[in-house]
Amino acid sequence: MPHFFFDTDDGEVRFEDNEGFELPGVEAARIEALDALPDMARNKLPDRDRRTYSVRVRDEGGVVIYFASLDLVGEWHIPHVTNP
Image (cartoon, rainbow, N blue to C red; front, side, top):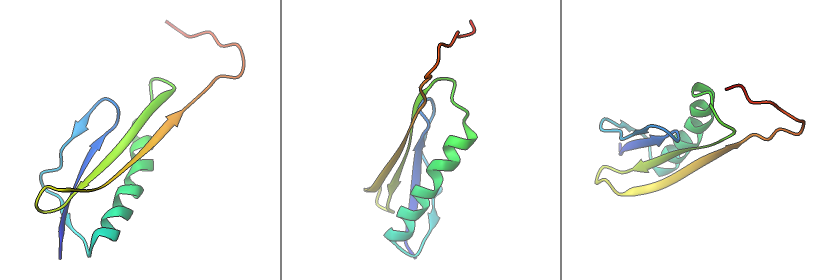
């Protein structure tokens, strides 16, 4: 079974996966990467209204085979005072 590595970036911290895990194939790796993005957004409450989360999938040889990102954008539509 192929081995894949999932490097993540939450806009502040980049993590390079050195352990990875086995999956049936590239489509399963793609699904894992896409599934990870909403979890990353939920687990890292944004301190600003724009943040990009990303996952890079590498194969056993270190070749990037897939990349996915999720952009979080928040906008006020009423007057808003920012706390210092």
